[in-house]
Length: 234
Image (cartoon, rainbow, N blue to C red; front, side, top):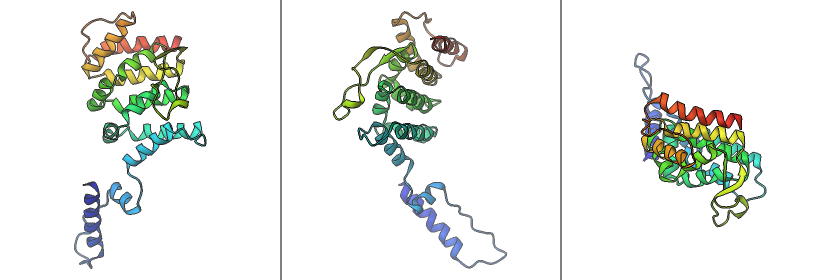
């Protein structure tokens, strides 16, 4: 376990630094990792920070301000820049609430959700797979095209939701652009995500050629740049 590894590192470091040494002998060979130091100081792990961030973002407590939620989302986005932390989203059960936040009534939280998704799936096949499995690609395509999706209603989150499914409102330009970024990260070098995105775009009347290769960056750029330009011109 990670805690055992940190304890072993601490023990080895302590022995090396407490034993009288020959001046001619080499210095201590063990250095403490950030995780070991955090364990010594009692600091929360990245997993705990991620869970706390999501709990803050989705809280119904009226005393937790929007600014606090945005700060928590910013922290979460920075945490999932790490490949290991991005993969923790699945293990911690955070993908579902993250994707639900794409439909939050507050535009700034929708933007942060799309940003966080885009960061988590970038060059990360396991996270791309989870996004596809949970229907996230379809949501991102709709948002990129200006559709305003709503959050699914869950017990205890009534005051966070709008109508279930697509609403009559149009998505904001800023959120659309961030959704395009997330979609771009999702489909590159991951064929299942690109296939779903292309299918969804064609269902909405978009002209997207069949059989685009997810490793063909020029072909992918053509699709993504078209969506980006439409978002900019919206």
